[in-house]
Amino acid sequence: MGIPGINTPPIFIIADNILSPLGKTTIQNLEALKQGLSGVKQHDYLLYCNEPVAAALFKMEEFNNIGENYTQFENLLISSIGDAIAGNKAVVADEKTLLIISTTKGNISLLETEEHTAELNDRVALHTSAQIVARHFGFKNQPIVVSNACISGVLAILTGMRLIRSGAYEHAVIAGADVISEFVLSGFQSFHALSDTICKPFDKARNGLNLGEGAATVILSAHQQTDTDVRVVSGAVSNDANHISGPSRTGEELGFAIKKTLSDAGLTAGDIDYISAHGTATPYNDEMEANAINYAGLQHVPANSLKGYYGHTLGAAGLIESVIAIHAIKEGVIFPSLGYRENGVSRPINICTELLSKPVKAALKTASGFGGCNAAILFSK
Amino acid sequence: MAAEKYITASCHIGHNRAYQNNNLVFEGDATGIDDFLLSVYQHFRLSYPKFYKMDNLSKLGWLAAEILLKDNFDQEQHQPKYTGTVLMNANSSLDMDLKYARSMRDVPSPSLFVYTLPNIVAGEICIRHHFKGENAFFVQPKFDAAFLKQQVDYLLDTNTLQTCICGWVDMLGEEYQAALFLVEKVKRDNAKEFLVENIIMKQVRHDK
Image (cartoon, rainbow over all chains, first blue to last red; front, side, top):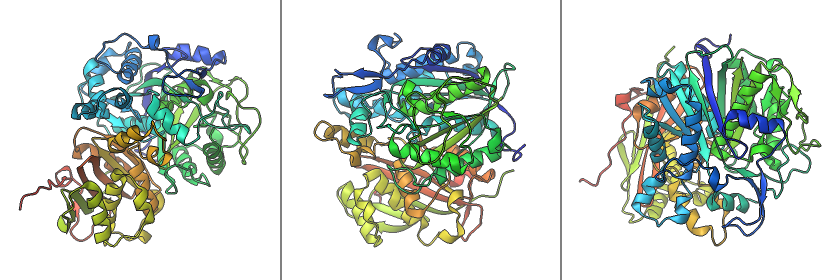
């Protein structure tokens, strides 16, 4: 049962969406993954980049025609939320519903195209976008923005879960998005962190990450809607307190966030059926994560990284990957980790190399990011 | 179960001034933000070489945490896993974003890029004080004491944290403001109850 008051009452995921270069709905995305398709493509002629880049990017025509007052970033959020709430319009109008936005860089691309003025500072502010999105749908409460590097998506779900559990709200609509522009691309390039092919998480030949664009939404509720609703049960965050751009050498900090997530759920390592890892395919991240997974005794649990399908979608990553984990539970399917052939980390880890069909009762999602942050969250039937 | 929680220390920085527990502990005459941040560092005779490579948002938050915890915090009494941060601001990392955007067409620098995330200031505070517990960074239009309390309450009431450094750290150009609070379950001298009406961002002005 875990600690009373932490994992009760249950919180349900009543709807979700993934909007990515692989599809505009969760169903389209699941179909693409079943076919082994990747959204990551070689781009030889990006306007702002003079070397080939492998990334999962939207084409201009893939943005919905919502209105020219919305930026690409807001367009993605609105499109993703719009699909997720299609069957849940009453939730939006409810006084007990909170909108939570997850992003790292939001409208940062405006700095590349617009003249710098005080008005631009306001337009780029993340809370401005959150308010624009909230107003578009008519959410009653002031929205919250979580911006905590690459754990933002997982932390946003966790924040929603906690606010519902504390009784402050009954529903939370949690949406994340990021757009890849010169700003983000040049920054990751400066770190020599980018791979020129589809990335290879946990593999011996991994040589960096792919960036990706995307958005995703989950709707949490204190009220179950259908028998198949998956629950978000527990989660935890930790900090390495070691280095702002390099992960922990031991993985203990992510490890204890995982252990706390399990113990709060009243579960042990043997109860976990699937791990959706962060798996960026950078040498240090994957090594640290393998250490953490071993620290928590989960090295035998089937695991994958979805970065080979989506690239690293930054503020959307934790949400996109959580939606896939939620559907792993619903459908009993675990996707192969694209790009993985031979173990390239120093501790054993059970990376899926083919599509697994098996019952999944409990799925763990992990994430780590700059600033030394780590997060884990648990979904279950 | 709601635990008893107290604000056992505070730090406010703005308009060339720094306050510890509402007492003025530094007043400078710097004309620019870079000089001001350095003058605070020098005034308190701090010695931390990493300070010089931080961006201004991190310097501000790091200095506020130094003043907050100075004389108020015994590291031995706080377990790293149970000590964390909940921070918010309005401008995210825009101060550094603008600097990075100006530089990126020449030679993009990883040492600038890494500071284009608001939670790096939390990372710097955690490295300095060896805090390994929960972190969260929120971007809101205004200081929101009720939301801050909601977040910190959950973490302390569920024993996820025993100690939390929480508050506001905002930086954009020459405009800056920090308000940090040390929240503990132990009542100390001059502690205030952790209530919304006690989580006040001091309005630091030039009035004499």
